Image 1 (cartoon, rainbow, N blue to C red):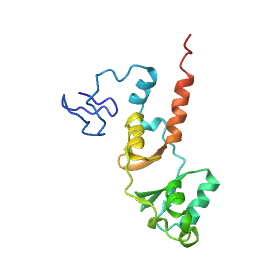
Image 2 (tube, one colour):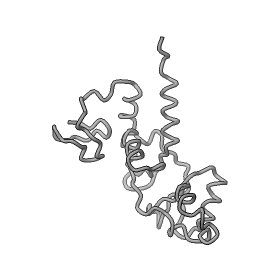
Image 3 (cartoon, rainbow, N blue to C red):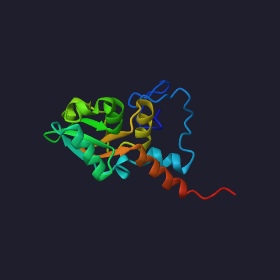
Image 4 (cartoon, rainbow, N blue to C red):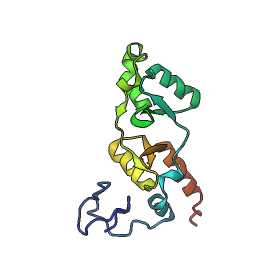
Length: 174
């Protein structure tokens, strides 16, 4: 049985996909009924991943990172060490974890407050897989890799924008 979210081949009768862990117990085999469903399941993440993101070295301060966000209209920074993705620092990290103690931590290295080893997806994974992980994991940003190297970021906003485009292309029902 092929998973409708990540296209992974699973043994017939399994309750959850071995790759993306989506519940397959109620799957009837008719996952792609509409053009929108088909697009989400078949379009790779690279079609919507932004290449405009901030790469922050481990020793950038939290304050410098937030200033970079404000200047560039970003909402997260991927943290890299010698070109390798080691973490992600998001608005949620800044507001949720640091707001009450901003004066003490704004000079801290970003490495002290980032989410280490963030969940990543591959550039050719379907958009539906990112949506699934965002929903189940509570993520708003997912780094995208190509051959193990960072090549973009997908955000909830990117997916909503993509969906908005798909919906506007659907003819109105009479």
